[in-house]
Length: 377
Image (cartoon, rainbow, N blue to C red):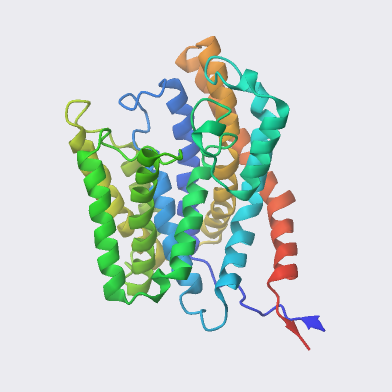
């Protein structure tokens, strides 16, 4: 017996979409740095809507999943699909949990009151559960923020990413364009309802296992992910010159735009965020998917940004915990604090790149050979 390396080979990437994912990931890290210095005040941010990058990631994921798998269901089973998604995502989930465990006891203090009283065995148990993506109930919190993944907060979005992939494989891949369109419209109405009538006027949340946070998480997930699937199926792409630059500027504008309405008129900000997620993000993806890269340098930039986007996103937050604990304890000036914030950004990129090259790519290549390549005579 031998193995055929041609079994469901990966398709060509949308280079611009890869680059945009990297742009958004770097903005996420920068947002978390400034968020720490704002004391968590959602009305005093520098990158006012940086958390919307997660919703942009969901839309990108839906588009890419549909592009990669919609026409392959005659060649693979559901379990084949799950294996491919696990191999793509799970190794870096484990790395994020390992880094979170390694840095956990450097984060103790007033910012995270439960850390100093958490025994090592309990932290290691949380780490092992983090490897599996099993969400933890509030009763197992070891930090004080009630996260479903206390060692690596952003893993909550990967939990919902897996939920979306399961829904896609079980049911939604079978929807016609009409039925999928109705589902997407209903999901948009759910999102609008929360943003306009909810208590925050924004989509911040989704990381805890309780009724309110789960509602936020599903409201954030369902529209963008399956709107991405629908956008891919419709094939209505927009072809313009300098698409990567245009889309990058649009992402920056959306995420940096001032928060509207203030605490007195939360619905105004809700409308802005609903419009951004429902209209602007699909527009950006349509332009990015319809554009092309002409220069070698631009292609290298997009490839680099795309490669490091997921590793940066899933490994940076343990550093943010350490930074938050330091800022809370020492109360440095903004100027002094941001010097360390810049260093944190650089280190986050370095850790993401090192994780990619030294761990993620070798592990995924081994797993592909072991579990994906079809045995032939």
